[in-house]
Amino acid sequence: MLNLKNKNIVVMGVTNKWSIAWACAKQLHEAGANIIFSYYGERSLRSLEKLAESENVTGILNVSCDVTADEDVEKAFNTIKEEVGIIHGIVHSVAFAKKDELAGKYVNTTRDGYSLAQDVSAYSLVSVSKYATPLMTEGGGIVTMSYLGGERVVQNYNVMGVAKAALEMSVRYLAHDLGEDNIRVNAISAGPIKTLSAKGVSDFDKLCAGYEDRAPLKRMVKVEEVGNTAVFLLSDLSTGITGEVMHVDCGFNILGY
Ligand code: IMJ
Image 1 (cartoon, protein in one colour):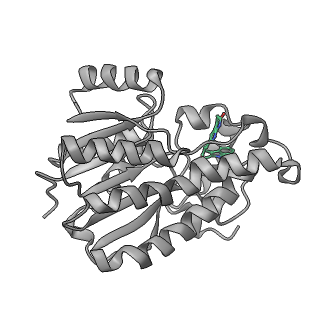
Image 2: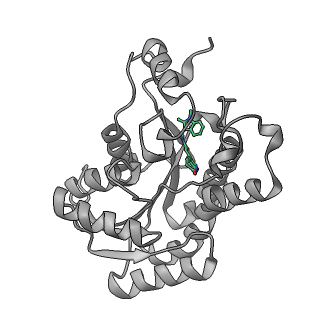
């Protein structure tokens, strides 16, 4: 049942070998899926080409997609339609906020910084869903990445936390809309992972140390565990699950202290 053979899955958001999107692609590939990568910028394309060679996970298509422009999202999915035909799943692993707004006080968030974070990190899922669903004629799954800072205050997460709150609520509204087409929409709320996006975060090492002490499983979550959950949520083992935000965080979110 956990077999994604002949399933075409779009993976958005690989920038380097630490990317959560890359871990998802590897696990999906191992489960038999055909992967279509969407990338943003030449540097990410070169990363994808290098990774394909070194880790033997080659996409059936690499397509450029700037998620902040509807025309570009539309164009990307038109290309996918022409080259591949139908798709069965999407991994949306895309987020961005200005670095200086991921430190200090949330009250100092600028209007521009707020819209940028919302645009790239939350609205992009809506736009992608709109242009991708016409290709999902056999039903399918959409999975996005969230974080605990979208439900509770996590120091420095600030404007990204508010974007993740919007993203998680979009998951529910999209699940409601797309259910009739047998398209399921879910989020994975991953524990902290040392990606490039996390490395610059102030006090990240301190946060990790506290995590290993306090999380029920007494360790950090592995990026492969997030990838495996994406496989599950895109497979027929999870056909009853939609609109869900699934914590893959070694249990950290249950703590009340
Ligand atoms: C990010 C910022 C502050 C605290 C944080 C994080 N904690 C964790 C993260 C505690 C775990 C990583 N995370 C969950 C993210 O969603 C990161 C998003 C992000 C990171 C950057 C860094 C570089 C940059 N812009 C960014 N935009 C989004 O310029």
